[in-house]
Amino acid sequence: MKEHIAGKTVSEWQEAHPLLTDIMDTSEVYWQNPAYQPKSKEQPITQAELDEAAALFLRFLPFLKKTFPEADLAEEGIVSPLKKIPNMKAELEASFPQTIKGDLWLKCDHDLPVAGSIKARGGFYEILHYAETMAIDHGLLSRSDDYSKLDDVQYRSFFADYSIAVGSTGNLGLSIGIISAKIGFQVTVHMSQDAKKWKKDLLRSYGVTVIEHPADFSVAVKRGREMCLQDQRCYFVDDEDSKNLFLGYTVAAKEVKQQLEAAGVAVNEAHPLIVYLPCGVGGGPGGVAYGLKQIYGEAVHCIFAEPTHAPSMLLGLMTGLHDKVAVQDFGIDNITEADGLAVGRPSGYVAPIIDKLIAGIYTVEDRELYKLLYQLHRSERLFLEPSALAGMYGPARWSETIGKTLDIDSDNATHLVWSTGGSLVPKHDRETMLSKGKEAVR
Ligand SMILES: *Cc1c(COP(=O)(O)O)cnc(C)c1O
Image 1 (spheres, rainbow, N blue to C red):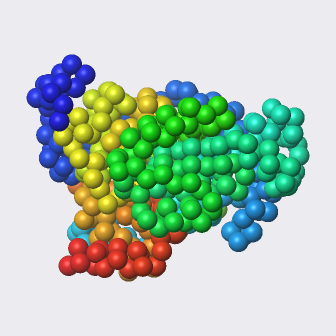
Image 2: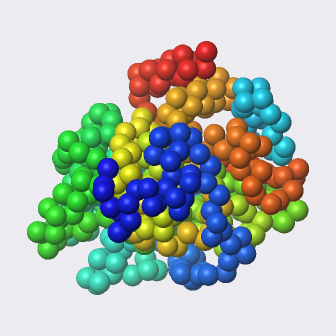
């Protein structure tokens, strides 16, 4: 623990924020964001930029279809299903005895093609954007071309002169590594100690260089950044500070709107949409939340979920220090089974964009994630990785915490849990996780 954090002692911080004591004890908490402005119209990112992000994915669709034939991409491209999960709702109602009013839906980003996690949005976007910019700048491509030609040998040898590097706890590395290798870039992924072995193995099978760091996420990012900076032809994907990653995630909001409309689900002030998003550095949940706010305004309320041992965005927003504070400064260890969320410091790009935009953040114990993992599998036959269950804990504790503090009529609310990863987890690892969950449920 640090003696002083931004010039104040820990007890001064505790006095200013009474919830901090529980957070430091790694107890579960719900923090209602005092700066929340449901109606805020601040627009650090313009509608034109959001539209352009969606358009870029569409330009690349012919390339993606050609290079990932096994993914059998839909006409809409890299999209995921939206599913109603009534059996899971019944599970939650029975095990946390309470009634959840309104329907429970799951946005299945664990099922996103190719990368199997929400990182298929941000990670793919950033690399495709970079590849497009490079090819256009070198007079090799124009936006009206059929991008499937990027798979030709002339383009691949052009891209092979450049390299990409990224630091990751696992899933970002997977998505950046896979898409960069397909484009033809040389790519190095710097993995933190939390990264699972199968993720490293899978990357190596795509020809990606994997460097393992016996340290946490921030250190892996720092080392990766340093190594990349020494090479003029290296482009570093900086998960702690990236607008392009963020833009890639925002595109999900339009997709949800179309899916809810198609399902006949109304979203307006009388029928609020409550969205629960697992948060690591904040890019994924932040981008989705930003996109949803632009569409639904005050009819949508976004809640972030973090592990009790890695409440990085919570500390960043509560103290107002954003990326100038890490969980370790307050003596919290950043050790969690939720590897996608094992992040000690929030993104400095994202924190100021979302600090008035999200309704609150809750923390959840690893043990609960395993329980939910087992319960979702038992009730809906869906498998998610532990990080991806963090959002499921929100509806479970709705009446106790979130519902109590949000001033809305929740009778007609729709609950949307964002599932962020899991479809690539190998069978053996799944079984280990499921039996851990089964134990915890007892
Ligand atoms: C990366 C990730 C998140 C969180 O995204 P951030 O951009 O780090 O906030 C959540 N769940 C899973 C499975 C992830 O891989």
